[in-house]
Image 1 (cartoon, one colour):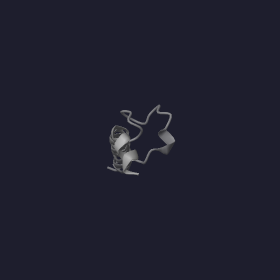
Image 2 (cartoon, rainbow, N blue to C red; image 1 turned 90 degrees about the horizontal axis):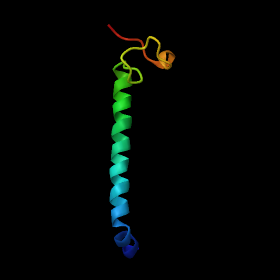
Image 3 (cartoon, helix red, strand yellow; image 1 turned 180 degrees about the horizontal axis):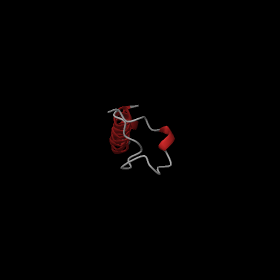
Image 4 (spheres, rainbow, N blue to C red; image 1 turned 90 degrees about the vertical axis):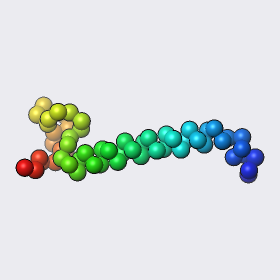
Length: 58
């Protein structure tokens, strides 16, 4: 088992880094939606995802 880890050490490091990047993107998306931001566009008028956005709170 240790030999397998030793031979795939580089692959495991890359996999962990990619997992962290994906996790950061998901966390950023969730935080943005909680703040009322849409799909990354400047506004929801004309946006194809306009029906899924939260109402802006004023």
